[in-house]
Length: 258
Image (cartoon, rainbow, N blue to C red; front, side, top):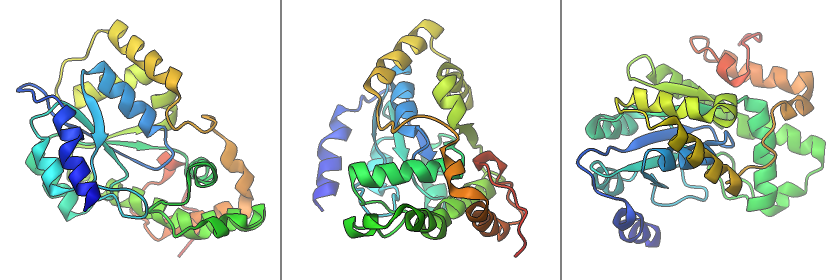
């Protein structure tokens, strides 16, 4: 309950109420540079980035009704790893802002997740992990990430891709939000029906946020090659259970059969 009280008392008071402002929902695969992008987007559009959920740790990042509805007339960026569900659809429809989804190569994301677990702690909704679980040797840890954590990633992505058939969803990838951030911000503004800020304002905002390096581990692509072909095949088998979903945006083909 303390987390709920904190959400009511702190971010809501600091988020500006605006007749013209609207919340921007940024949902994202974990470790997809989403914190950096959400902060840059907020700065460029005159918003605040605040939590979309009342608490973190191992709790699934479901939207809180009080916080979400209280923010519908405020200039904020709501950033979270929220899975798609009927409740998510309801909040999006009631607030009226089409969401933005940020994705990344799944294996690269898993390597960055490993860094996160070691450096920031094991409290994540993706998998049950405690400090002793991180004492595995590297091969065991790679197996753990593929066999346990990848399941959450695959379901998260598949859920949003199926939802995209019925909602207005903008999908941005890791390389775009990290190397062409200004273009990504302009795309979001068009997506929500808002004028784009001047390019100079966007560029200045991006550079100011980039200097803080928010939640960047190494910020490079291709590290997922460390998993090797056999582990990739296991992830492809997970994806193959959703034959109607194109997993290529997160670097996974559907070569295995169910």
